[in-house]
Length: 168
Image (tube, rainbow, N blue to C red; front, side, top):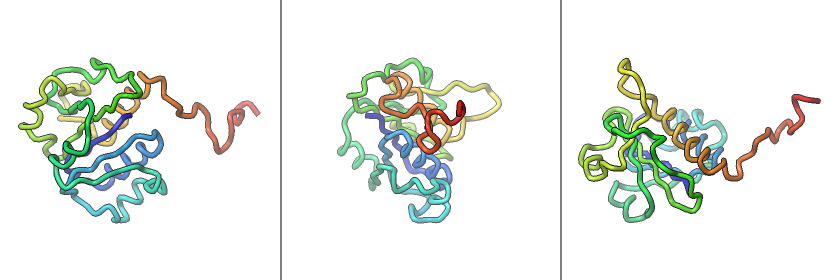
C-alpha cells in the first residue's frame, strides 16, 4: 500500500490538492500535527474540491505517534537527499510504502533525515530553485510508485463519458 506522510504541513491549498490526488489514486494520507490550518477551512475544501470525503486520512499528534502506529518501508523526500526518487523499487503492491514530506518552509527536521540517510531521496532539479512545490512532488512520487506497480486497479478511461467518448 502506498502512503503519503505530511510532516507538519503549513499551506492548506497544498494539502487540499494532495487530498484530491490521494482520493483519486486510493493512497492513504497521514497528517502529522501541528497543521498550519484547520481541516475544515474552506480553503482546504476548495483545494480538494468535493473529493476530500473520499480521501482516507489520519491525523497524528506528533511524529512519535505516527511511527508507533505505522510499519513498513519509509522514504524521506528532501532537497538534501543524494539519491534520485527513481533509484528505489516500489513495485511490491503488498508492501507498506511511506513517502514522508516535510513542511513547506523548512522540510523534514535534520535529525529525522540523519537517522534515515540511506532512505533520503530527491527529485532532481536545476540550481534555479530550492525545491518543487509540495503537492507536485507528492503527485510525482505517487505516480512513480503506481507506474512500478502497473497502476494497480486504476482506470485507464473516463467513467463519466466512457471509453469510446473520443471515437464516437
